[in-house]
Image (tube, rainbow, N blue to C red; front, side):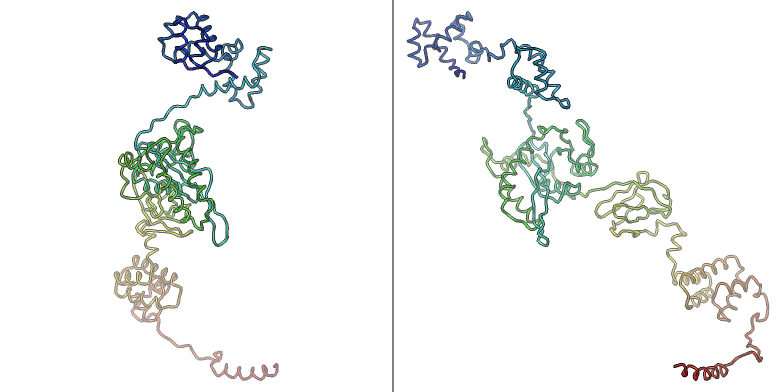
Length: 530
């Protein structure tokens, strides 16, 4: 094992005493170092032909550089050849199936016996790989960014009814300037839970940073790309609502968000570990416990700092955050549908139908819906808005969206037809009112009324009124009777066209006496059978 180099201040003392004519033994005894050490330094100075006066005027690091030129391994003749191949080996390591051992075998084959051993080869290669990927120091501005991620390990609560352990994902966020942190257990990493946790995080901070830096999770980024990732539309709406920007971290670049990664590790110690022996029976209980541990974590004095995360946040960063908007954010989902022939769109999320003005039948419309409202746009204009319904297979219809024909059909009722008939004539109103006293299906009566209104439009008023009078006189409140009177022109006759006549008497008629006699004859026959 090589001896540790002595201080350059001692080396300067050696030079000073040697110039004063002192011998090696005296120098060794005076400076409490070995004679061999004194000899080796004096030999280095002589072999290097250095002027002792010049060496004594140098700064200690410069002097050390002259007397200790570096490790002998790097002056070895083998090093010159290996160093020329290190860039190539570094690139090859990224290729599929290429290992250090394979590269070492290729290296030996190319330079023969004068080669480094496998361990030395790996050491030099590793040093080169590290040197080729230096880490930059990230300087964070106050109130500029909020790092967002999910912890890799879940927390649990117990379902009291079944005894089942329910896993919860843990949302984690951190302000890099102050280190102020937030954590919240949620049911899943779905978009709804992610947006809800992010919204609660901003409420916890009491303000909005200039930008959000999420990891490339599916709830935040729909398509990962190192330069221009496609951000989820709901997250963009959230950012616009809070007047902030979304700048996702690069794919497979954990150093971009190293602080939140380290916070997750610290949460494992300060939150997970401290709750490991606690049992929770609801997500609410688990959430309250986590928030309490996070509060205590922010109040712990940081290593090598004379303040806590909370103190720095309150003193410097909180006032730099933008104010929260007055209204809370609601996720807006977007869909595009074609208006069906019945002037409704089908919202597949809820399996529910919503009406659109009939003039847009066949056109493509954009549907924006939140938890409570469904808005429909066509060519950039809002054409309909409904309260969201979660009833599957049902219709939400605004009467004004229907055509006049369909509105008429939906408005049909006994009162509707009576009122409409009265607006035409008092006699027709009386006739229709009597028509609805019949024991027939209401839909049939509606059709009869429509037929009467159609007949009234095509028939002279005097003729139509007379036909109604005849029908009412004979208590025949049907469309067919009135229609036949008009078609057969029986309204033109002066006398009563339909006199009330009784049936003629003849021998084929059977009265009540006949049927009473028949009943008496049948009774003895039935009793004998019993």
